Length: 63
Image (tube, rainbow, N blue to C red; front, side, top):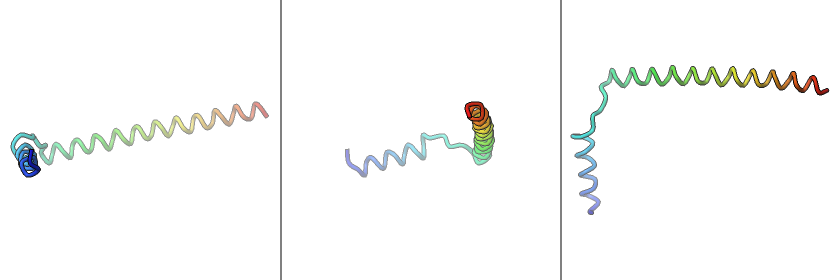
């Protein structure tokens, strides 16, 4: 397969066969991803602080 033919087929598929989201759909999806990322970061932060405090209690009991 020639490289030019390959790129021509890629271009044709990307322009004619791929269904691209609208700007509004893209914004909505991006907002959902940002909110989910913040929630996951918050959960990890709370777990980290909790584990740190538990380990401090355990270390104090062992000393």
